[in-house]
Length: 316
Picture 1 (tube, rainbow, N blue to C red):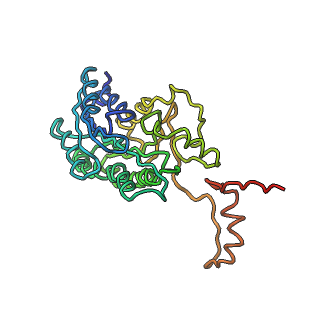
Picture 2 (cartoon, rainbow, N blue to C red):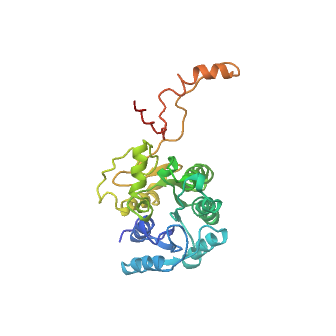
Picture 3 (cartoon, rainbow, N blue to C red):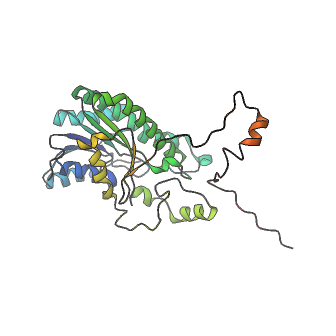
């Protein structure tokens, strides 16, 4: 057992399995008392089970750590409040929040039901607000806090994941605003782009990946810009935990308001949005002027992320 987080209290939502479980286990190994939150539902958020959270708590305790289970949903304001209350009632405070909980309702937007949109945003984005809103007053009072909100490289754009992508990129904007608001109170906030072989990544069928590749669709998600031949060992979800837990330590407090990638072997820092090209004139543009200059200036070299299918050449 380490002591980097001795005396600290941590909440990890969605920590009954996968990436969240690894984070909870390592937080406890470093001395934190951990609230293991998990609704125990299916990948789409349906059904509930106490087993995943309870099993992780048992693992932590068997290893000599301190943990308690919570089975509330982050998707409701009351449920999120009860998660934070579990930490306060059991340990008297809360120092660390890692919001990992998530669900998938993948569908092309022209087939997506309103409920499928709402359900995904409720867990990921509203869940981030719900948990942060309840935990921040406690952190402000103690002038200390570490918050890691699990976003995703899918926020850069993934076919069939308009709801998930919108929720995850929304969390990045939330993090950037929070970091400005909370830094004066000794609270750091970062967005995490995790990765690994989990229930979520395993749910994407190989046929979908093959169809995207055949059409020339550029993926903006977890593996954007990376080799598809990553080793099985590098895809272990436990690889995320040390980098995330580092951000939750005293020394990790030097990093805030950032998007940090934790998938595989690297720990990566994503650049903030910035202007890469601009056209200018002293006065209002006309459509004629824009039609003339945009193709050769702003749009020069842009790649269509989903090119139109090539028509078969007519036969003689």
